[in-house]
Length: 400
Ligand SMILES: [Zn+2]
Image (cartoon, rainbow, N blue to C red; front, side, top):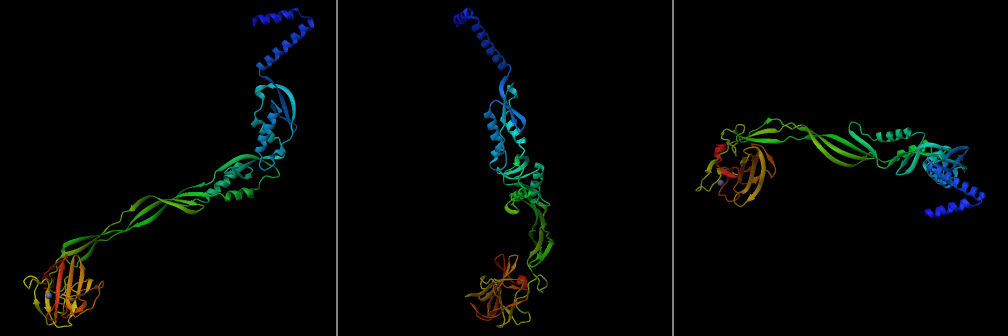
């Protein structure tokens, strides 16, 4: 290599003068170009657009692609028609002065008299309308959202679609009207999430206390029940004001209920005079009767009290209660079974006729049947039974 360069220089040295000059100029031009390139100086074009130099470009193709970028930013169709044809003037410039495509596109848009910069609203990427300023669009959007807020509750409203505020250019003659923007915004679906609180009553419970201090049939409210209150908190989702989802968040108890405490007597009734709380005698005391068989009679097998009395004598319910059975059985004949609560029941059997039906409420002293001799019976009498918790006990301890 070194030998080749020396050989070329030898040839120049021996060449005629004009050849030497040409060689000198050629080498100088190469050295100059190399030096300018090294300094960042390039051959470029000044772009004259609508009378103004708006950019410096490396090539005419660079301007063309910037023009396409500008067209894409213009609202509407056939937007390429707005771009003027530029004039190019060659120039030397620093490489750092060459404009980017984005800068050139902006310069084109700003210098095109038929175009106006405008704020625009895009919904899911589609242009919906324009306004003088993005603040104006924001104001309208916020009005739409706040119209779905629910008073008195914590709530948040949001659009279902993707909303973008963009800056765009429109033809001064074809920018959309405010009505178009309003219509577009009013069509936006709004999802509102509301934390709703409703008052819910908590019903009190009734607690029964059994007390042997009181006779069967005693009933008194010791503590009056008071309903409580809770706040039921729900997360409710509305779409354009219509409920689409509701989830319970929590129940906050504001007031606990106060249980009602009821005292009922369990002591056996031993009064013989039918005073309050005591059983009454199951037939009129004035009737001519006698006890034909005692409890425990017939060798212990008789579990009731037999009161022999004439047919048709009224049979009284010995306490308030509910008729749980009223019918006929081969042994009892026509009979009535009354439940008085607190595990206490009474039975009246061998009746000629029952005057009550199952489910009837009866009061103490009410005539519920008439004496007879139906079923396994040898004469007119009332077979009267008292049951405590399912066990038949001696009725005389209750009615004397
Ligand atoms: Zn009997």
